[in-house]
Length: 162
Image (cartoon, rainbow, N blue to C red; front, side):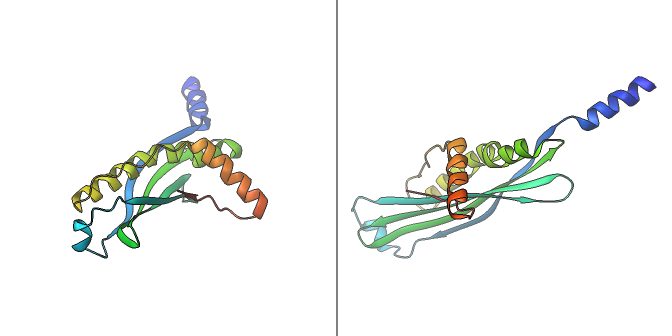
């Protein structure tokens, strides 16, 4: 009985990191110049912006969300505009604050991002466009750049633009 209590205490103090759920929080597709845009053979120019943020929830739960905007331009016209937000709920317990910050800034986005990429590729294909496969992101580098920007201008501005 005493061994069970000791084991229970050790287990209750062990670090915990669990993915609870990944979900599509928001998705919008606009094709402002349809149907004419489908007849335009101009080579498209793709632009994207991406940002991550986290929000503390109750009971050691954290939501980490990645927001992405993809714009396709053909000359001066917008071919399509996709705005998407993919999020995950994670349980992070018994983890030191520094490690917790790294989990929220690097590990969680690494888990959520493939779902975002797949949803954007899928919705564009369903909208009759070739799928756009977003490039891989080095979330560790993204996080480091985010921290540098945050320190230099006192804000938490961590957008990537391309």
